[in-house]
Length: 160
Image 1 (spheres, rainbow, N blue to C red):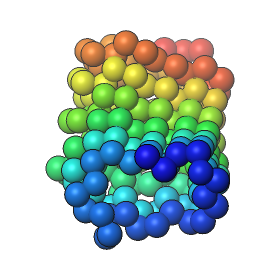
Image 2 (image 1 turned 180 degrees about the vertical axis):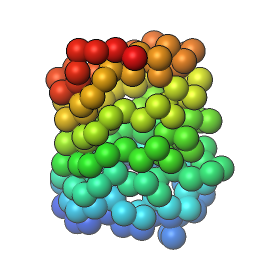
Image 3 (image 1 turned 120 degrees about the vertical axis):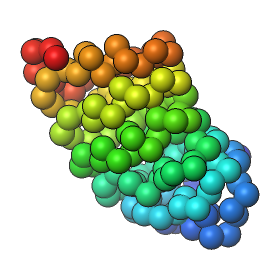
Image 4 (image 1 turned 30 degrees about the vertical axis):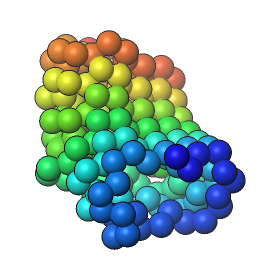
């Protein structure tokens, strides 16, 4: 746990130096810059919290790959932007229990691949710039979903 330490550097490459890491909390620091491949190769990582930092750039598509163990992912309250790749939704679904992407600048539509996240219990994408039709069918497919927060986005009033 390295949270609340006022670190203000770019993120180190944990995947290269700590391949067996299981729990990593870097929240509430001042880490800045893109996430990039900082966590690539961490196949045993089940908990990652980098919320409340100054991270920027696009969605870290390499964050979860095939064979990932990630169950808890918190990227909230940063400066991340762009669309969430469909490949992330497809790859993340086999293990994720909680996903928090709130308070960033993500845009586009919420990928339909999240409908395959049968274990996902918490899905928070509030305070972003998601737009388009609200994918009700996607959320109905999430059989374990208990907490859903879509507040303060730019969704259309139509539903699918």
